[in-house]
Image 1: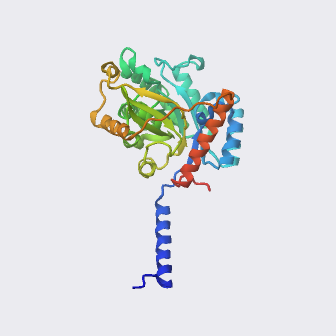
Image 2 (image 1 turned 180 degrees about the vertical axis):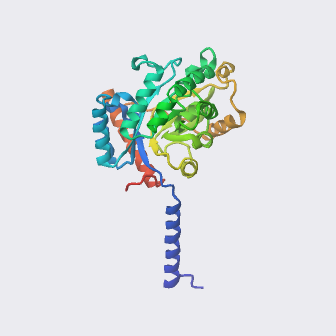
Image 3 (image 1 turned 30 degrees about the horizontal axis):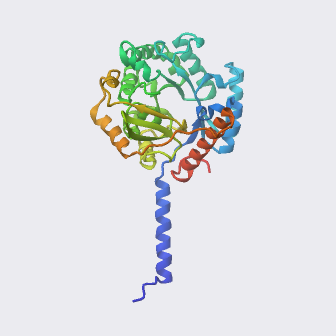
Length: 357
């Protein structure tokens, strides 16, 4: 029997394959793609240099996640940054660090917490950013007296103190799940208490793993609140005392990004995908030790089980080390640039993200 397809059958199959490919392309989430300047922090670049590099990468957005990236905070200086971004066709988001005066990450150099947040909102408005990214603190804050709830109460107070200013500015305060400070449900509770009409989330997939969460679980909870993002991949594996996490470039970890961004597009379609690549080191979470759990008294079992399942699928990885004899600063710069460039390429070519070719 001759099973060789006829020309008509071949053309028909080719046409159907092309139609299927086109349908898949249409179903891909049309999400803006960009990066957080912290991804290439070793470069020490200011806003103008970052924007020039961003234009070469053909990204849609850039998140300036700190206030030191600008020459100064005058209206004239910020207007120059916005004009440069507009001319390059790049959307900006603005941010800062901790706005919690009781956190160990609190920086007193920018005035009171209220003054600090007001400044961030003013910068965001000047740049045309609809979000002002900030955070509570870090995982060690959970160990302080009063636990994480004490710090959450302070953040709620700070947010409420600037509510009218934020609303009048058209800027939403975007609190990040940062460095293991809060699990997704805890941050969602904070946002609801402060007021979700003017407070939202900066969703960070990497920080989710530092809070004993599967990034997919974190997305389900924080996605509806997200107005900004810091995205990176993670590898998780079982280790002697619990599990170890290594943040990685996109595609080098264990997250199912196709499923993640399909859901991301449904839950927060207006939120840009901004890569915050921080890779190369390992951190163990010794949850097999009894003393580990004191700062985590209310972890939800069904969500923690997803993190454990993630760890069971992972395999140990070595931490990155700079080449022997190479200057550490130059090695860090080269590594960070390569990790971000690789991640942007993966997001475009494998995931179909980004509005620019």
